Length: 358
Image 1 (cartoon, rainbow, N blue to C red):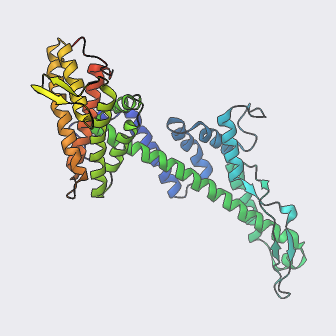
Image 2 (cartoon, helix red, strand yellow):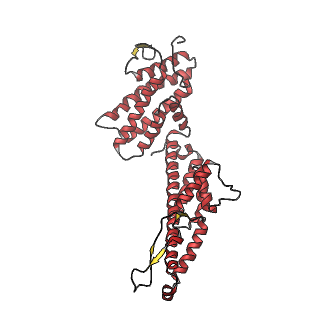
Image 3 (cartoon, one colour):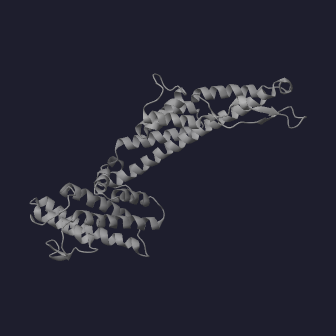
């Protein structure tokens, strides 16, 4: 997504730190670094931008099922309980005591295994799990033909089966951690682009829209996501979302009954009854233009009056067969955020319910 003049200076430093820290963790996981060595760095990322349950989960992965020092059971904190539940889920394992051996081929000294379900939990921390796996694999490598002939077959099949489960658990924890940190990185990249395009305070606009009782704020964030798509149909959808914000504002901001409104900025009456939400927003702006004595505010409201019609008309192109170019859609999204932000600052987005003071 193109950045405006100023580039990354418009992005809050914390977003860039999270982006870079998450990328560093992903790079280490991709390069095959020992998982236990990555956990502290990953937890630092999750503590900056992640959920409480996942932060506690990494504590259990670091310290084992007993948790970090001073952990008291039963757990009472909901996030801690959720993190522990995730640890238990990822550490489910077979019960070696339920494994039995059978010799499928008399000529093959290696027995096969009749296994059990995963109804136990491997309570080790990740570093302990790595150590016991290394020891178990060393034991396997050093087995001789005499060992296969003479040792208890249940032991012979049990250790390799347990080692396989240890490897599976380590791989599962690594995969889950990678996926979660990748989502944090994706958020940070998107947030960086959004802030570079709209400024770091764009969430205020979203919250202002959502406070009106609609989901237009959420949809406007969705429009930003659509801009990142290479699909031209998504750009048209983003344009339509901007048009819908104008309609939603008109419905929410104009509560005056009547069929027409005498609009000074238009220099004529405008219809406000029926499917005239855009005109309702224009009337809302006109009322505030009349009520303010601040020259700067008047000029800005005049610009917003024109911008409202521009957004509506250009956003309507999203319904057409020719579609909308990416730059057009991006400009529409920026203008829509500017419209809502300015109206929130100038009017506090308080609906007009009467014209007595106009």
